[in-house]
Image 1 (tube, rainbow, N blue to C red):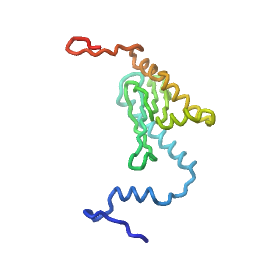
Image 2: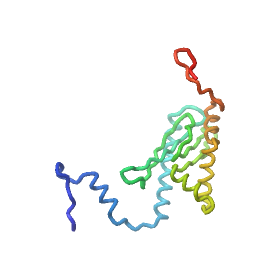
Image 3: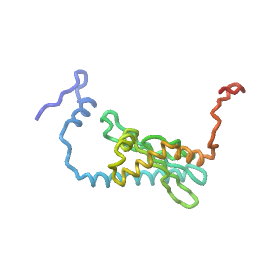
Image 4: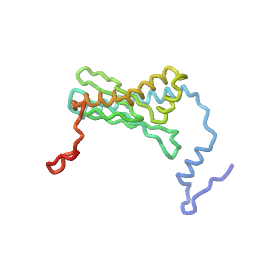
Length: 176
């Protein structure tokens, strides 16, 4: 068994060394379907938990759950973690984001959009002719983001004007 290198200043193994070792070790063999099933269960359990907290803490008929996917740079963007945010306003659509709307009166949870990361979106656009049905759905999400459909939806959900005034008011003077 090979002895692990230790830092010159620390007696124990460093985080960087652990990450490096984990990236280069032989992966455990696991059926990908089991992983996907577990990730789905975790996703929906965390979503339900966020909705429950939103019901208790957000006042209003509807609120939104924003799921932002964070990529771990230390692990070369291979590991993605969702962050769940319950909010009273609809967020602006962006890459790597799912947005759900919960209606407290009807107790209905609707998915508004699920936008993939930008690199995945570019890949989908390049390979339009050979996509699977699931990838075609993702491409449709990307096209709706690109043509502004989701931005208009967010504005409508927040009761904002569609053609907003982008001038800035500074010291009671309008600056273009």
